[in-house]
Image 1 (tube, rainbow, N blue to C red):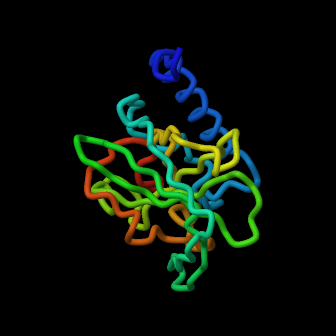
Image 2 (cartoon, rainbow, N blue to C red; image 1 turned 45 degrees about the vertical axis):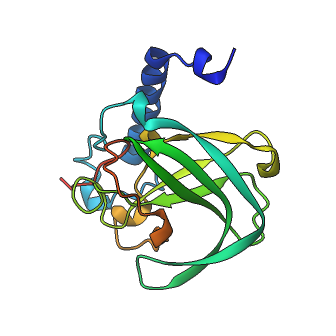
Length: 189
């Protein structure tokens, strides 16, 4: 049985909605929420695109054993340095696309940082782009494919308040398609 055979779209949508409720609860009540204090009483959840399994794609993985450094601008005008540890290649909306996956130097975790922009950026979604994180179960060098799920795309904390400094997606991760999946732009109450 392949992963595609095991995928249950109804169970997936149910689980995704539960995760979104959990995140909304966190953002509405946790002391570390990025929602500004003056807006917390009126906060009734983030705005999301509807769950759509079509925006959950399988990508081939090209790992980079000797990763290239990539300098990313941040929302406050600084620069931060990441390493491009992998490139994901996939098809979405009948378009062949690639996304770089990054880690900060000296980060030994398996978590991959995937910031991106698409044709919704600055209109339906946050001006600075959105993020995804993937944590494969195996080392990157052992990975041939990975599921890239745009339904899990989220806004960086700087989308909610200027007190945060967030990396902006590098130009190589600007997708030339509309990706109506994941979190929409935050509009304060």
